[in-house]
Amino acid sequence: MHSADYLNRLLLRYSGTFDIYQPYTILGREYPAYGYFFSHVEKYVLVRKANMWSADSYEHVLFANPKELTQTHLEEYRQAIEEYIEPALILKGEKLPEPNHMYSYITIAVITEKALSSELKKAVKKFKFEKSYMHSIRGYSQGRIAVASMEDTDVCLNGAGRTLKKLYKSVFEEVRAGKPGYREALEKQGLQSFKQNAPQ
Image (cartoon, rainbow, N blue to C red):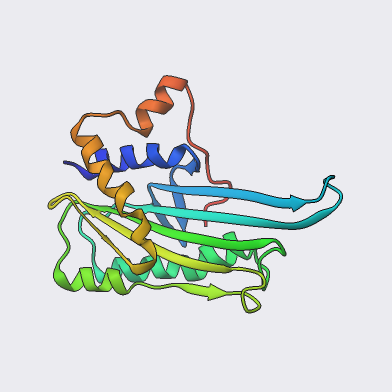
Protein backbone atom coordinates (compact mmCIF):
# COMPACT_ATOMS: atom_id res chain seq x y z
CA MET A 1 0.00 0.00 0.00
CA HIS A 2 1.33 3.42 -0.92
CA SER A 3 1.03 6.48 1.29
CA ALA A 4 -0.30 8.56 -1.64
CA ASP A 5 -3.28 6.19 -2.01
CA TYR A 6 -3.97 6.29 1.71
CA LEU A 7 -3.78 10.09 1.80
CA ASN A 8 -6.10 10.31 -1.21
CA ARG A 9 -8.76 8.20 0.54
CA LEU A 10 -8.28 9.93 3.92
CA LEU A 11 -8.84 13.32 2.29
CA LEU A 12 -12.11 12.04 0.85
CA ARG A 13 -13.28 10.98 4.31
CA TYR A 14 -12.50 14.40 5.70
CA SER A 15 -13.94 16.30 2.73
CA GLY A 16 -17.49 15.39 3.74
CA THR A 17 -17.37 17.96 6.56
CA PHE A 18 -14.08 19.84 6.06
CA ASP A 19 -12.94 22.41 3.51
CA ILE A 20 -9.78 20.94 1.96
CA TYR A 21 -6.95 23.23 0.83
CA GLN A 22 -4.21 21.88 -1.45
CA PRO A 23 -1.32 22.43 -1.10
CA TYR A 24 -0.79 24.38 2.11
CA THR A 25 2.32 26.25 3.19
CA ILE A 26 3.22 26.95 6.82
CA LEU A 27 6.43 28.71 7.88
CA GLY A 28 7.91 28.15 4.44
CA ARG A 29 7.18 24.39 4.39
CA GLU A 30 4.68 22.97 1.93
CA TYR A 31 2.24 20.29 3.10
CA PRO A 32 -0.01 18.19 0.82
CA ALA A 33 -3.23 19.47 2.38
CA TYR A 34 -5.00 21.32 5.19
CA GLY A 35 -8.58 20.80 6.36
CA TYR A 36 -10.86 23.32 8.12
CA PHE A 37 -14.15 22.70 9.94
CA PHE A 38 -16.43 25.19 11.72
CA SER A 39 -19.65 24.66 13.67
CA HIS A 40 -21.93 27.27 15.26
CA VAL A 41 -24.59 26.30 17.79
CA GLU A 42 -26.90 28.67 19.62
CA LYS A 43 -29.69 28.46 22.18
CA TYR A 44 -32.53 30.96 22.20
CA VAL A 45 -36.00 31.35 23.71
CA LEU A 46 -38.94 31.65 21.27
CA VAL A 47 -37.23 34.15 18.97
CA ARG A 48 -33.63 34.51 17.79
CA LYS A 49 -33.35 37.94 19.42
CA ALA A 50 -33.60 36.27 22.83
CA ASN A 51 -30.31 34.44 22.41
CA MET A 52 -29.22 32.62 25.59
CA TRP A 53 -25.82 31.42 24.40
CA SER A 54 -23.76 30.65 21.33
CA ALA A 55 -20.84 28.27 20.91
CA ASP A 56 -18.35 28.01 18.07
CA SER A 57 -16.28 24.88 17.48
CA TYR A 58 -13.35 24.55 15.11
CA GLU A 59 -11.10 21.81 13.78
CA HIS A 60 -7.86 22.24 11.86
CA VAL A 61 -6.15 19.26 10.21
CA LEU A 62 -2.67 19.52 8.74
CA PHE A 63 -1.78 16.58 6.48
CA ALA A 64 1.89 15.56 6.23
CA ASN A 65 3.45 12.83 4.09
CA PRO A 66 7.10 12.16 4.99
CA LYS A 67 8.60 8.92 3.71
CA GLU A 68 9.83 8.16 7.22
CA LEU A 69 8.77 10.00 10.37
CA THR A 70 11.59 11.41 12.49
CA GLN A 71 11.90 13.38 15.71
CA THR A 72 12.73 16.40 13.57
CA HIS A 73 9.33 16.08 11.88
CA LEU A 74 7.57 16.04 15.25
CA GLU A 75 9.41 19.21 16.25
CA GLU A 76 8.39 20.76 12.91
CA TYR A 77 4.73 19.91 13.51
CA ARG A 78 4.85 21.37 17.01
CA GLN A 79 6.38 24.54 15.59
CA ALA A 80 3.57 24.71 12.99
CA ILE A 81 0.99 24.55 15.79
CA GLU A 82 2.68 26.99 18.16
CA GLU A 83 3.91 29.55 15.63
CA TYR A 84 1.15 29.51 13.01
CA ILE A 85 -1.97 27.40 13.56
CA GLU A 86 -2.77 28.67 17.06
CA PRO A 87 -1.73 32.35 16.68
CA ALA A 88 -2.92 32.86 13.08
CA LEU A 89 -5.83 30.46 12.57
CA ILE A 90 -7.28 30.22 16.08
CA LEU A 91 -6.39 33.54 17.73
CA LYS A 92 -6.33 35.42 14.40
CA GLY A 93 -3.53 37.61 15.69
CA GLU A 94 -5.32 38.52 18.93
CA LYS A 95 -4.50 37.56 22.53
CA LEU A 96 -7.72 35.55 22.90
CA PRO A 97 -10.10 33.67 20.61
CA GLU A 98 -13.47 35.17 19.70
CA PRO A 99 -16.02 35.43 22.57
CA ASN A 100 -18.11 32.41 21.49
CA HIS A 101 -15.10 30.13 20.99
CA MET A 102 -15.69 26.77 22.70
CA TYR A 103 -12.83 24.64 21.40
CA SER A 104 -10.36 24.23 18.57
CA TYR A 105 -8.94 20.82 17.76
CA ILE A 106 -5.65 20.80 15.89
CA THR A 107 -4.85 17.46 14.24
CA ILE A 108 -1.57 16.56 12.59
CA ALA A 109 -2.40 13.71 10.18
CA VAL A 110 0.84 11.98 9.20
CA ILE A 111 0.95 9.34 6.47
CA THR A 112 4.34 7.66 6.18
CA GLU A 113 5.76 4.69 4.26
CA LYS A 114 8.03 3.30 6.99
CA ALA A 115 6.95 1.71 10.25
CA LEU A 116 7.71 3.69 13.40
CA SER A 117 10.50 2.66 15.75
CA SER A 118 9.58 2.06 19.39
CA GLU A 119 11.23 5.38 20.27
CA LEU A 120 9.14 7.28 17.72
CA LYS A 121 5.95 5.58 18.93
CA LYS A 122 6.71 6.80 22.44
CA ALA A 123 7.37 10.31 21.14
CA VAL A 124 4.08 10.36 19.22
CA LYS A 125 2.15 9.17 22.26
CA LYS A 126 3.76 11.92 24.37
CA PHE A 127 3.04 14.65 21.79
CA LYS A 128 0.89 17.23 23.56
CA PHE A 129 -0.50 20.70 23.01
CA GLU A 130 -3.21 22.05 25.26
CA LYS A 131 -4.11 25.62 26.08
CA SER A 132 -7.12 27.16 27.80
CA TYR A 133 -8.15 30.78 27.44
CA MET A 134 -9.32 32.87 30.43
CA HIS A 135 -9.62 29.71 32.54
CA SER A 136 -11.66 28.11 29.72
CA ILE A 137 -14.19 30.97 29.62
CA ARG A 138 -13.01 31.47 26.02
CA GLY A 139 -12.62 27.73 25.50
CA TYR A 140 -9.48 25.75 24.78
CA SER A 141 -7.23 24.38 22.05
CA GLN A 142 -6.01 20.80 21.91
CA GLY A 143 -3.41 19.16 19.68
CA ARG A 144 -3.91 15.67 18.31
CA ILE A 145 -1.58 13.59 16.17
CA ALA A 146 -2.33 10.45 14.17
CA VAL A 147 0.42 8.59 12.30
CA ALA A 148 -0.58 5.95 9.73
CA SER A 149 2.38 3.83 8.60
CA MET A 150 2.02 1.83 5.38
CA GLU A 151 4.76 -0.74 6.05
CA ASP A 152 2.91 -2.32 9.00
CA THR A 153 -0.56 -0.82 8.37
CA ASP A 154 -0.58 0.57 11.88
CA VAL A 155 -1.90 3.77 13.44
CA CYS A 156 -0.10 5.50 16.31
CA LEU A 157 -1.85 8.31 18.20
CA ASN A 158 -1.32 10.57 21.18
CA GLY A 159 -3.77 10.56 24.06
CA ALA A 160 -5.91 13.36 22.67
CA GLY A 161 -6.13 11.61 19.29
CA ARG A 162 -7.47 8.27 20.50
CA THR A 163 -10.93 8.94 19.06
CA LEU A 164 -9.39 9.02 15.55
CA LYS A 165 -8.20 5.41 15.60
CA LYS A 166 -11.33 3.89 14.06
CA LEU A 167 -11.29 6.35 11.15
CA TYR A 168 -7.61 5.90 10.34
CA LYS A 169 -7.78 2.10 10.62
CA SER A 170 -10.82 1.95 8.35
CA VAL A 171 -8.99 3.85 5.60
CA PHE A 172 -6.54 0.94 5.27
CA GLU A 173 -9.46 -1.38 4.50
CA GLU A 174 -11.00 1.06 2.04
CA VAL A 175 -7.74 1.44 0.10
CA ARG A 176 -7.34 -2.36 -0.04
CA ALA A 177 -10.87 -2.59 -1.40
CA GLY A 178 -9.93 -0.20 -4.19
CA LYS A 179 -12.39 2.51 -3.20
CA PRO A 180 -11.93 5.87 -4.97
CA GLY A 181 -10.41 8.83 -3.18
CA TYR A 182 -10.58 12.59 -3.00
CA ARG A 183 -8.82 13.16 -6.33
CA GLU A 184 -11.34 10.99 -8.19
CA ALA A 185 -14.26 12.70 -6.45
CA LEU A 186 -13.03 16.12 -7.55
CA GLU A 187 -12.55 14.97 -11.14
CA LYS A 188 -16.01 13.40 -11.23
CA GLN A 189 -17.64 16.62 -10.05
CA GLY A 190 -15.38 18.94 -12.04
CA LEU A 191 -14.21 20.66 -8.85
CA GLN A 192 -10.90 21.74 -7.34
CA SER A 193 -9.58 21.96 -3.77
CA PHE A 194 -9.65 25.31 -2.04
CA LYS A 195 -6.48 27.37 -2.47
CA GLN A 196 -4.54 29.09 0.28
CA ASN A 197 -4.83 32.86 -0.10
CA ALA A 198 -1.44 33.90 1.23
CA PRO A 199 1.06 31.08 1.84
CA GLN A 200 2.97 31.59 5.11
